[in-house]
Structures are given as structure tokens and as C-alpha cells.
Amino acid sequence: MIEDDFMQIIEHAKDRSKHIERSTCYAFKIDDKDGLAQALGFSNTMLSKVDYFVKNDDAIQLIELSDLEDQIQKCRFNEIQQLATENTNKLTAKEKRFIRKTAWSPMTNEFKRKWGGSIAIIERLYRKNRLCESDPNYQLLIVCKNQTDVIMLDALKVQLEGMMRIVQVCRTKDLSRYLIEEKR
Image (cartoon, rainbow, N blue to C red; front, side):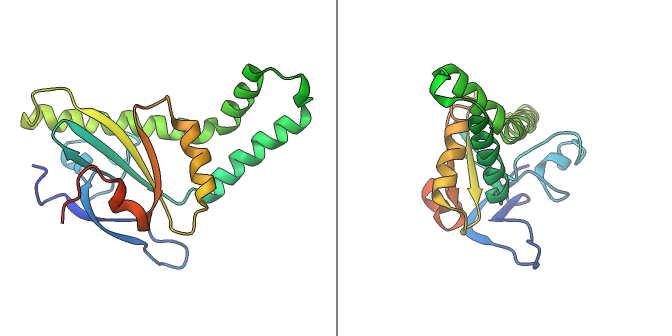
């Protein structure tokens, strides 16, 4: 079921100027009308899900493509603003972590929903097609557009680590170096 029908080039959605940033890599499409989720019986709005996935033996890499620069800036601004209203010299490390976690929670909650929804889709695929005898090991790869500041990507990765086993963040032009398996 997941063979050539859902293998597509990994690409971002159209931006405001109708430009589509594409990679040279292929993966199985999960989201949208032409994705695996709908073929498995999930309506497009039933679950939050990532855009693509690749697999290598029992490793499954969930791939989310996003232009997160504005969202990351907003989270960082909220964090800095909250810390500025407090006397940071008197805050404990635990209190600072709580402020940081709260500022980043809209974005991290979105990724948690996509993580869980995508795993549900892949688990159904595996059950229906008896594709794997062992439990898969999931990881997340977030692919931002090429113009995204690398420092911002590091800030996002720090917020997501610990929630999910392995989280990597890269730009479209670097995608091939991060995939667990590249299909052409």
C-alpha cells in the first residue's frame, strides 16, 4: 500500500507569492488529499499529522515542513518579555525553565499533536499491511525553509528535545543529510 502510490518529492506548501520550495529527496506523503492518511480512512481534519515519513528497517522518521521563522520569533519574544517583567536575578533555574516552557508551549503543543496523530496513522498502516514485526522507533525531522536563521532552528530543537526520542531541525537545502533513508 505505501509503495509508489504515496512516494513524492518532499516540498513545502506554496508561499504567498505562489513559490514552492522543493528538495531533491523523496518520502511517503501522509498529509493532504493525496496522502496516506486519507487512504487509510482518516479524514483530513481528524488528526494533526506531519507531511511525510521515511523508514529504514524499524526506524521511522516523521517529517514536518514548516516556515516557522515567524512562530519562533514570537515564542522567543514572549520568553524575553516574560523574563523582562520578572527580576531574573531572583528567579530559580526551575522558574526560568517554566517561563521558557510556557512561552514555547503553543508551538511545542502543535508538534506533540502532529507526533501523536502521525504515529496513529503509521500504526494503522503497519497493522493493515503487516509491515513490521517489531515496534518501530520514531523520530521527528522538522524542515524549515532555506532562509530560516540557523540559530532559530537550534532554539526550536532545544524546546522539543525530551518530548520525543530524536528531534532534528534543518533547512530544505540540507535535508538529504538528515534523512534516515533517501529514496530516489
